[in-house]
Amino acid sequence: MSLGNDNNNKVSKGSEVVKKALPQMLKGGVIMDVVNAEQAKIAEEAGAVAVMALERVPADIRANGGVARMSDPELISQIISTVTIPVMAKVRIGHFVEAQILEALGVDCIDESEVLTPADEEYHIDKNKFGIPFVCGARNLGEALRRIGEGASMIRTKGEAGTGDVVEAVRHARTILGEIKKLSVMPHEELMSYAKLINAPYELLLQVAKDGRLPVVNFAAGGIATPADAALLMQLGVDGVFVGSGIFKSANPGKRAEAIVKATTYFTDAGLLATVSRNLGEPMSGVSIHSLDSKEKLAVRGW
Amino acid sequence: MSLVIGVLALQGDVSEHCQAIQSCGSKALPIKYEKDLNNIDGLIIPGGESTTIAKLSYGSINSAGSINTKNNQTLESKISHSLMPTRIKTKPEQDNSNNTIPYSGLINKIKTLGLSGLPIYGTCMGSIFLAKYIENNLNQLSMQLMDIKITRNAFGSQKNSFETTLTINCLNPSEYRAIFIRAPLIIDVGTSVEVLAYLPDYIKLDKDYPTKAIMVKEKNFLASAFHPELTKDYRIHEYFLDMVKK
Image 1 (cartoon, chains in turn red, orange):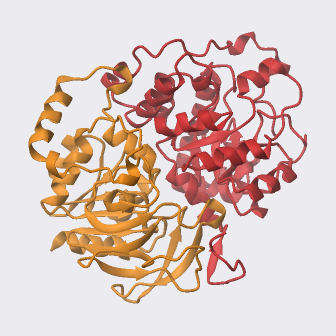
Image 2 (spheres, chains in turn green, orange):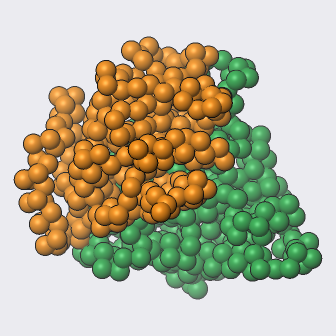
Image 3 (spheres, rainbow over the protein chains, first blue to last red):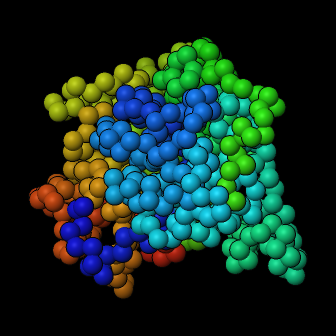
């Protein structure tokens, strides 16, 4: 609230460039799921670039079932006042009132997340209406560009949250990055049909074809549990990683968190990866993606 | 021969700075290891998260595995001969910091190079790493190269991040569109520090400070609270390159 007068037209807050800039500052970093202020502190001390405040990590949402909603604002406020790094929080897909509440609370970024139970099975939030950035999940380029078209300032792969199985994050990262490569060599006359094929906004698709990358920062998420998982996604070409259940469902969260941070920075240094991967204790036990019923999969949420 | 500018590449908006440097006709080199520092003419410390960079640059990169390589120990002993006396003293207000992070090579080498004249430019988080004093900060470590006092997140959370048009007299024309993201503010400066831009008067803050500077220069060091790498106006990178050429 420092900038007294919001109507002052000399100062522009919440502009597209200002919203996209926050995720740019997070590149090369690790964003960690935390469920209380104590975990947030551990994450910050381990070197997280941001924390994602939520009531239950995805592994517990998966285990407990029921409707998963935005976290208690009290919990989010406690986390905001505990750490100096950016604080993100999740809202249900399409639940723009939860998003209004999080914006009022002063979170730095909102995750419109398939991990929570969707509030709208047809429409996502109109993210352009908000003054703070949104991150959204995507499995492919069309989905990523639809979210960006709605105003997302950051994209993450969906992966399959709460499993500790990295296979879906790898699939989604390879799909998105592969489609971008394909676009960059595609003859111009094919672009409109390709936009139609993948249900992507044409103007955004043209921009991706020209730049050879998404117009926003692109992180990996969903099932990352080890330093090697983080480095794998970084080598595939994402800008950074989210780690959800992988840290605080493991035997030694602080040590594992720090190791994943280092692995994300020095992702091509196999010697260092070998060193930081030693003696981390049990990782989260996890569930194989193939043991899940199709109705248990979270990544299919969102349209 | 074109200049080679290193960009500290531990975390943050590294590629944006590299792009800016290349657009100005110089070569950009991402820096992750000490050895990368050997052949650079200047260094940029980008925007990012200061706690993360502190962890990565001060923390021995081997500590997670509890294994110290010989390399690192050699380095530590070198440090104890050269830089120990000037090593960062935690101020009384920082005494309760839980700082068990061992001092490592990368940032120490940068500090040594800076003290021997290497031009260094810090943007946003980078400016925090150059500052001698950091307000209200318990376990932040910086290189203490500039005689400035800085406060982190001076404007609050992301919803108060903003862009505005500044007057920067060392640029021609002096109008400059600047982007502030969870930005710090330079709240006091020593006598040897030249203030190149102040926070405009129309931006009101809750607290009063001895000064409200957003771009400062001292000897071979330059710092800005905002992010010139996020725009296509590269005049501030050119200004820094001019400092490097001198």
